[in-house]
Length: 433
Image 1 (spheres, rainbow, N blue to C red):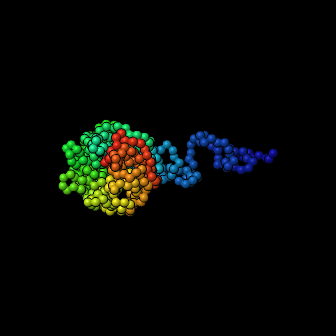
Image 2 (image 1 turned 90 degrees about the vertical axis):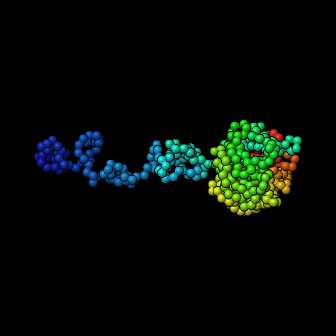
Image 3 (image 1 turned 30 degrees about the vertical axis):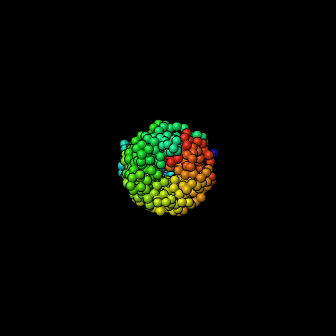
């Protein structure tokens, strides 16, 4: 053993360590001291210079002079609610990274929204603020198809019958209810939950009408008065919508001036009279209506003779029609189906089996799609379709009761679907849920 020097005054190797006059350990090297619990250090401070601080990896974060955290990433934090602040409302194409439950605050109006359906491009934002109005996709389509009114020939005459069927499931139609009166050469459009019927030709009193009526698509029952069109050119008029706004195009008036180029519009959710929208490129009746959320398109029709003209409008902006292109055949009474991207015109007079299609967002001539079951025109006037399947019902010659269908995205011939409750032609057609 080494010699130990006891003097109490020097700190070094092989010397006793004496407490100082205040009972404290003098300054010594403690580099080999271990197992000291942090809680046993009751007083004193660790010099700031000895602490590795900052906001990068392996640093100790220090509050700033106002007691706030510095700017650091919170990407790995969980259970923290967040919201987007913006000077405007969200839109259906506002695709939130947080999905359902994402919160949005409009700093201009104070409105607040929660995303309740995070379908890309078709999001639903539900208003939870003090105001009103949700942000959701508009639709003129749905799972239920309807055929309204029509003509059953001299023996059966004018009809007020409304039929319906489930578009996804082939089968025969079922009675839904009745129109406010018997009428033919009518058209219809949809707001998804509400179907709106425009114009027509009545047998009592005989003549064209400016009447607009509506049904609640999910609830079988009779139609209810909605309002009036701007003219009585209701025979052979053609209606379309983007789900929120309906537009009636053209038609024939039994009084002067006969065929018309009038466009008028209405808000589907709010019963009332139609308002002037503008004019079509030419006077016409019997055009085939097709629509997306932005554009309304009409194909063919009859002016002084049958035409092949396709024209369009921007549904949200009142104004006149603009040339789009041409159908593959000159005809009127062609019937249509349309989803967000594609419109299909089927049949028509002179009677034909032809179906052709357009891309609604891109002007140009129509392209051959396939054939309907037989040469026929004056089937359901309006878009009777879901997002995937389009239906055409009834028609002439022979007041048929046939319902047929196509897959809108896939070119090909129509397929038998089932039968209407009563055969007829020039009925209106629409769809919704």
